[in-house]
Length: 195
Image (cartoon, rainbow, N blue to C red; front, side, top):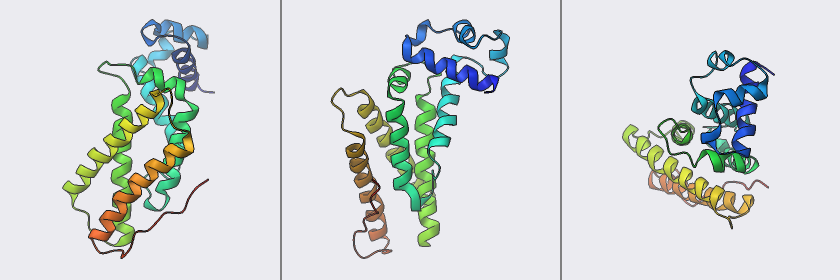
């Protein structure tokens, strides 16, 4: 494990076990048993570590991110990742500060939505207006984030598979609506089920 990975693992361990405002660079580095300066060789601050944890782990979890043909697999992998890391993200998403990783997550979801629709345009040989694609990124990416956050926090949240099926149907409705409107399909197309 690299120094950077050790710092990320220590931070993740601390976030799950104590309030974030009690976590300092010193407490993080005490767990790694490395000198404090090593932290600053890799990160600006503790919020930077949270953003890097998300970016690194979600890339590993979501292999087909942005490919229209695999968006249901991407969605399921992403939900599974958040479900497996629920305690960590419940604490992370409570943070209401300027450098909180919420923006990193939202930007990632928006980028993913944009890539999926760009990929859809390439596969279906249709042109998607850039401003409309930006609108889709903003609205669908934002909606996905809010739904995800609600699912993570709600004490009686849906089981993973049910949340997946609802979000999949929501996205499928939007994609099929677009394809019907652009006359690329004649009837509603259901993406194959996973699990």
